[in-house]
Length: 406
Image (cartoon, rainbow, N blue to C red; front, top):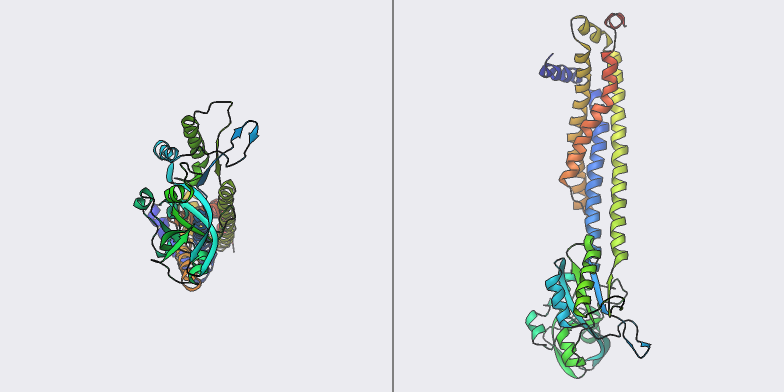
């Protein structure tokens, strides 16, 4: 019997018991729908969590001045003044996996505006900082590369500093404040960010070109640190090693001499990212396995009932020349059709459910193409797996005994 005829016979058999066919498909519909909904919601939540962690800096590498020793006296971390702007430029040019880089020079000072004053951190940085931190401005703009080159006295305020000097929620753009009795023009205010991974309040700071802090406030010819963003969170270690190699070569450090700098990655945040992805993967895999297992058992159960009810029909067909292979294929096709139709409907329901949650509850969701393909493939595989035993049982019936079956 041709495959086309087999499909026609299978569909006709399913059509004879519409209610039972619908209830059988319901298990697969629920299973596949649950897979699509949970995968889409899980992917959306994962993307949201990764974005939040990314803004905190999973791909950040901190390069700081290291230890300095003289006459047996060791100054400890930050004691060396060996990091320079040229070092930063060399890292940009020689380490291809570096995406963004900000030289830094930090200080603390009393900031004054009118009759208000506030003790805060003056963070000298570069134009890449908003890109590294995924940090937009609330008012105004961040300073430009030209401001860095000219050591311009411009300032971008954190929200805490803005609230203390100008009032909560105010836009101070264009105002002039004093830092160590030097006038700085306010050109922007950053959005609220909160604490950084190292604990400092990022909103309680003034951001200004690092060259301005070096030349106008501290009279220094070196930088204190560099904040580096790697192209990917997956190659942090290699990027950190490449940065260390460049700095050792520039500072003429050879073993066993200690480094006069420190290169550190936010490994805890990176580890959290990996663990979070693994947890989500295992959770969704478990949901998919249980849901499809329930649907598959339902299909096998109904197909076994169908074999029992159609025993005389099977015996009649085999006595008229149908082979065991034809009977096997017919029942297998019925199981696969149940699975595929149920899978298609389940995909639509799962997609609609996830989009409904996004619309009504603002829950993030993202329906990935591979999730749809996986669910559709699993539904077909489930039909074949759980339909094979009933089909084989039907094909193994003795025609004479089947014709005698009441």
